[in-house]
Every structure is written in structure tokens, then in C-alpha cells.
Image 1 (cartoon, rainbow, N blue to C red):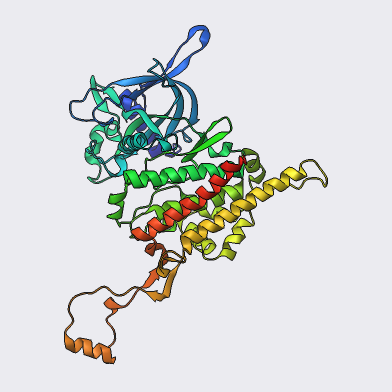
Image 2 (cartoon, rainbow, N blue to C red):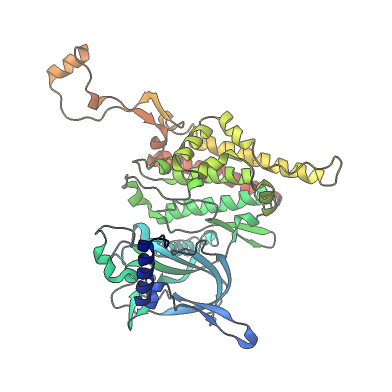
Length: 489
């Protein structure tokens, strides 16, 4: 909008007039989050979270009562990073009125993709509320996983008072009659306001103190990943730096897998081979980046774990290490530039141990200490710890890309013309055609020409994926058990 032109000034005035005609909820006003003045000027923020008693597992159902639980916000974990738009925000809060032993909770306030008029849909992108409910039932049956996944305390779809009636807070509600002028299958307005209260409250990976702690935390998160897949048939699909957290109690530390907003029912994922691309760019698998027409499996998430460990190794695990690598030129930057660059870089890096070592040689190293200084021994310990992480990464790479327990077609990082798939049968061929082709008197039918094998797609096979998943989880569990047994924190 260029207000130096007559048209720009006209558009600007039209915008101001339209704003004046909007209702409060259309301007982003949310009465379920409010500031309360306190005594002596000590105010605080309160936020309403839909109660689990609403409908079934927090889902909106016809005729269900809408009730909320009020929480007092004590801190912000994730803030909106832009002025405009609707973003995911996370707060630490406590119940305004104590309910049993419930203490601090993490409140996730987000706009989730829901199909239009599909509030009760229980698969696909609605999943987080239903998924967390199912995961909570798993933890009740398998308490050894308590604390490694979020427990849903309250949560549901936010409703607002619109002209005296409760309405679901969605982009459709905000746009109102304008929705009639949008394309029928447009997804731009199919977002709905969802708010969840979960325990425990975790800490981000950047607050870890050592490589040993990282290995333990990642191992716990992967065991949770496997348990959720095995017991609940839920595939996470968004392993990233922000979606693994940890809790600390004294000298004990535990990892936690969070954020099931992009998760999917694993059975549905196996039946879906369309071009789906989800996740966080630097950590996305090659199949995911390519939008390959194969089902997403646990192998995609294991690839993400590998890229995450390399990413942290290069930029540093602790806050201090990250400060020292800030602004440095590293090859992993290619993973966050664009999709094609990320695909090329990852395929090249994982194609051989020597190519992987090019990245591993860029791992964090402490600044050079003065010879004989008291910090020299400490620096040597840090270097040795990062070297141990390199060994773990090399093992995981072998388990994913060169696993001896899977068929040869599922090994490698590129299409192999020497290994070909048998052409699909297209129907019965008459004897004359078969004889002619056998004698070489005619050229082979192009439709039946064998295709080069793509190892990435071959690893989407359920049995192959299961083997790789178990091997990667096992590698990290062995390392984590050894660390815990020696108290090497």
C-alpha cells in the first residue's frame, strides 16, 4: 500500500473504515486473556483454558456445555515473533483456584489447522487434543513413560462471545460473511483457536550442561517416541530442537517429547502416499523434503534425530557454546536455506562416512586456552565429549543409511540404476508378443521398463522402518544407560 499515490491513500482510508466496522473479536481482541490489577500496583495476567469436561476429551460436540479453568500466568516460554498474524504462544501458569495437587502447567495457545465444519474430526491435523488424551491413557497403563510425554490437564477449542452467542474462535468466525467469497476448498481460513494446559513444564535443550545430558535426554525422547508409536499408533512427524525438552530433579534428568500438533495416526500415514511435507526445515527427512509419494514412517523421524544431533554438535549444546559459535560460517546452514539446497546437502553428507566427517570436523571446539592454564583439562574434557557425540552420530548414520539388517535396496542415499525394481504387471501378454520380446525382435515396452531403486523410498517399507527405528533407539539407549550408570553428568 503506497500512500504517496491516490490509489494508496484511498486503500488506506478504506482499511481504516473497515476496521471501524469490525467487531472486537475480528480485531484480535481475546477476552479469555486479561490483565488484572492487584494491590499496590502488582497486577497479573489470567487466561481461561477450556475444561476437559467439555464434550469428549475436550472436543466440541453438539449441545456440550462450555466451561473453562482460569490460570494465572507466571511467565512466557514462547512469544509471538511477529506483530501481525496468529502465532503459537506458550505460558507457564498456575490454577487460580487450586485443584488437588496440580501445580505449574504449560499452556499452549495456538491456531491449529482444522477442516471446515469438521470440529469433531478425530484424525489428521485435529489430533493434538485427541492424541494427548490417548497418550495419557498409555501412560496410565505404562507408568515408566510418565514425564517423557505431556499429560493433558485441560484443553479444547476456545470460544468467544459474538453478539451474545458463544462461537468457536476461528478464522472463519473472524472473516464472517467474507468466507462466502473464498474458494470452496481454500485452506487459508481453516484454522481454529486451541488452548491446552499440560504437565510437566519442561526446559529447552539450550539449557543443557553437557553432551552427556543431551544423550540421555534424546534417548528418553526416542523411547517415548517408540512407545507412542507402538501403543498408540501415533507418528510424531516433527522432531526438532524445540520439540524435545527436559526436566531436572536434583542430579536426575529426563527427556520429554512434546508438540503433537503435526502428528498423525500411523495407520492413516501408511495409507497416505500423497505429497505431504511437515516439520522444521533443518531437521526434515529427505523423503519429507522431496514430498515423496511414499508413506511417512518412523525412519523420517529418526533422520530428523540424526540431523538434530549434528546441528547441536556444530552450533554447540550449552548456551555458552552457542554464544561462541554465533555468526560462524558452517555447512549446516544449507539445511535451513531452501528445500532443494537442503536435499542436496543432506544426500551428499549422508552418502559416505568421509562426507559426514566434513560436517563433524566443524563441531564445536572451545577457544584455545593458554598453555598450562587451569582450564586446559576442562577444555580437553569438552573436546572428548563432542568426539563421543561424533561416534554416536556415525553409528546412527550407519543404522539409517547402511543398515546390514535391511535389504540392500534400502541402503544408500540416491537412486541406484544398477538396482532396479521389477516392472509392475500390466496384464496378460499374448504368446506372440512374449516370444518376440524374448528373441529381442522388438524393443521393450517403455511402460514396463525397470525403474532405478530409490533407497529413501525403499526405507518407507514398514518392516524396514521398524528395524531402523529399533536400531536407532537401541543405540542411544545403550549410551544413555552407560552414562546413567557412571553418573557422568
